[in-house]
Every structure is written in structure tokens, then in C-alpha cells.
Image (cartoon, rainbow, N blue to C red; front, side, top):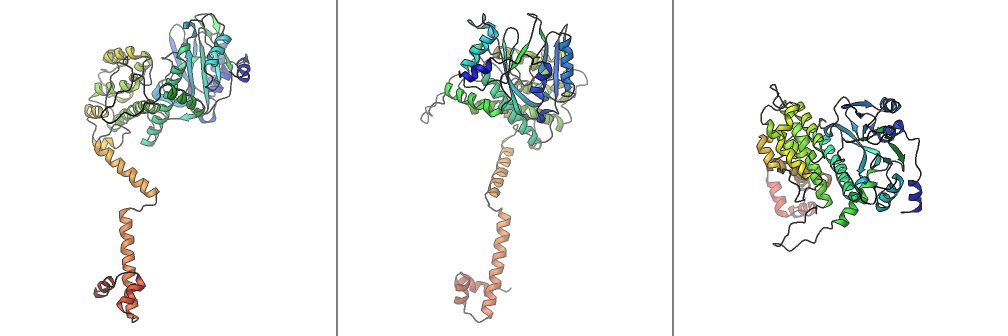
Length: 462
């Protein structure tokens, strides 16, 4: 670790309070339209979303009352909606929760010593914007100077849904890689969903009675500054093997996904969640096949939920907003029982990658979901990924046509019109030259065509 980096770690912003904490994470001009979830884990868990204009004041009031166990969302939420991945509007930060107390050799060290040890090992990563002594561990937060606007899963239009799937997939891949990169320091695999809350600066940790202290180590960064070193590290740790000769292919080893496969898996899951919401809108709410729709949604949402409670919350919101349920068969209190098999496999698979032999989660194909939900070809025209072969071919033809146009290639109809216009002009010119007394060979030479072509033109009535 460089001397400058070490010196920076020793500079603690001791006056970094709840107001500064909120403004640093959520104060970017691009993210001010979203709300901030503030939660208090008192006698019971309670939370509420506030706009940026009032959230700092609310946080300071809680700090003045020495409220215990106060948390804040790291990403911006849709106004007047409950906190969930589906309602994340802006991706403001990446973060990791290090349970260093579980690591031999770190448990007895002071917070500054533990932080120094972590950052010395992760010298390839940019300095986090914030570091915090969370009580028994360490929070590291990389605030983004240009947050991603992803809208909600209720965003209008396929383009908005595709943009959401793309950025949410990239963000989740970075979170997953942070967990792997810092696994030796107790990175909590459950603390990586976009709707996650972390302790608020100045609040009290009820377990040890100490205030949670944050220090600002660096300015907010561009997302690429964190993504690039993580991808480089992963590619070095999991090099892509040489392609074996045809007929001798071997399956990749466990946990051996490429960085592209990591992204594709997250993007696929986000796209399926968006499509299942779109399907509900097209059908004015789902009245049948609801159990299969819930199963497919839970399977996709599990890629972005890393504890059982958050997965149940996502599914409860989906059922509440997308199901026609007059008899309450899918009421919030009944969903855990209906999701019993999904949740059981989810619990077994927490912390394991998609290719690990320990990952027991259900796997569905697009074809299976389309069949289970009887998605018509007309409905598939509104989907991102739940499409069959005819729709794939139609979209491929449309992309190819767009590519040809961008390269200056004319459409067939335009070509035919131009050809007919050229032929008409040639016939007119041939008759004019013949009227001037030129021989047919001379007319052919002038026009750059054969004598036979000229004969056909002149022998044809105009």
C-alpha cells in the first residue's frame, strides 16, 4: 500500500454525522428525485421513505434522541413505495459488510488496524468513499458520482425495462465480485441486494452501545473505476480455459463462470422480473396460472435477494401488485407457505455461485416459463427475454435491417424504385438520340449499353 493511501486511511472525518452521510450517498443531482428509506429496529422493525429535502433532518432527530439501530438505504427508492429491489430507482453506491470479528487474527485488532489490513490486501481496488466501524465489523461504501437511473419495474416501454435490466445486472455483478474479492475478511454474502440498508452514521449499535462512526476516505467515483479492477481480478483468478477440440468438450469447473456469464445471468433474471410484470399489465392482472407466475418470479428475484426476508418481500409485492386475488389466496401471510420449496432451496444456496454444486436453486428456461404461463406471440412482442423462436427471428430481421440502413444499404423497395427510374430515363434518352439521326450502335455507345438493349427500347411503344 502506498504512503499516500496509508495516510489517507488515517485521516478520519470525526464530524461526519447523519446529515453528511445522507447527502454524500444520495445528494447527487441525478438522484434527487428518489426517496431514502430510513429504518429503526426498536421493539419492532419500522421504516419509512423520505425525500432528500427532509431525510437529513429526520436522521439528525433520531441521532439526537440516541436512537438505537437506525439504518439507511444505500440506493434511491421510488416515492411512496415500499423498500424492495423492484422499487429501486437510482443505484447510488456499491458496498460490502465485513464481519471481521469472525476472522482469526482480526478479532482482537482495533478498527483502524482492521481497516488497514483490509485495504492493504485490496490494493487493486479504489479507496472506498466511506468506511465505518459498524460495531463488530466494517462497512465499505463506494459512492457513485454519476448514479444509474434505472426507473422501477413499472417503467413504461421496453427500452426502459431493457435499460433497467442492463444496469441492475452490472451493479449486481460488481456486488457479487466484491463479496468474492473480500471473502477472506468476512464479506457477508447476504448484504449485497440493491435494497439493502446499512447503519446510519451517529446511530447507536444496540449490541455494544457504541455510536456508529463513519470516515470519508475518498470522493465518489465513476462506476467503471470499481468495475474494471474487479473484472480484472476475477479473470485472473478464473482464467478461461483453452477451447478443447471438437467432440472433447469438458464442463467448466464449479464457480468457473466468465465475467460475461456473470453479467448475462443477472441481466436475464432482471429481464424476466420485468417481463412478468409486463405480462400482468397486458392481462390487466393475473387471474390464472398465478402459482406458476409466482414460482418464476421468485426464481428470478433470488438472483438479487440474498436473505430469505428480502426474497419474501419481493414476492409479496409482486403478488400484491400483479395478481387479481379477491379471495386472498396469495395474501402476504400465506406466501411463505406457498414458496416453501423455493425458500428451502434458497436457504441451502445462499453464498454459493450459480455454477456451484452447492447451489440447489430451481433453474427454469424461457421456453418453460412461456409454456407454463401460456404467453402468446402477441404478448411476446412486448417482452424482453420471454420470447419464442418466431419473435426471435422477427427481432433479428429488424436488427439486420437497421444495421443495413446504418451502413448505407437501401431497402429492396427503394432499390426497385431507383432501378425503374433509371430505366425510364435511359429509354427516354435512347429515343431522343435516335430522333437526332444516330444509328443504333452509336446510341448504344453513348448510353453504355448493348446494341440489343437499344433495339428492344426503340421497338417498344413508349
